[in-house]
Length: 301
Image: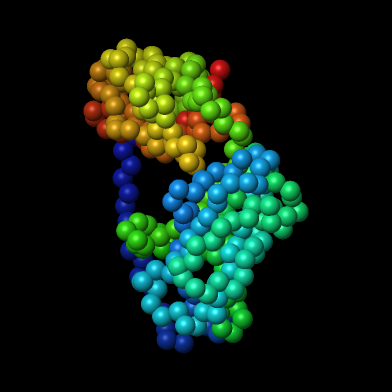
């Protein structure tokens, strides 16, 4: 039987008194002021790579946000490609240098990029990230990514650029060729939730008759041993980048164990066209409270 657990977070204040001559854990001379560079995919360009292909329309835009202020101490920027291989390991290569006009719209040559990694073409389940290095006037390079720290400047996600959140990188997943009839998106699937939730079973994914990218999931109430009220969970597939978003919270069963109004809402996720698997974070709740958000999967049978 499912139970709702309420987490109470207590905040403790720790007051530290530091003397004026307290030394920093690193030399102050090694601290460098950087420049924030926003990196986004250009509209109407492709958002995924295809296994084995280096053709396509791929373009990114580099912008220095107004909040940055003076950046005369920057010599130029470099375009940095970060490749996550099938085994999860990551490495990086500079694929363009001497970028000094902003905003900059840059076309990506996938063939050249993959050659820098010693490969000829994308491989399914790789992920290619595009970010930027900053080169200062004294020659210092502030990397947009390192194996030790990951992507730089992710803490500035709250900054606004052109009416949206700041972006430190563009992500291109490598997918398998997609069936143009979209048959993979719907049909008989198997639902799995993580051990923390513990339910699994057969469901049916149905495409909206007017929008093949809007998918409704039938059978989730029954998977949980409940009586369905006929409502279905909504998933929205984005054909540009193969991401998945959800619709509104939907009540799937009027009664659930000792609770009422069992509901689900898909938060975010992705679709793997190589294995026909949806990986989706789903928030599960009842009228009395929320159980939490769980990483779930729908696998085509």
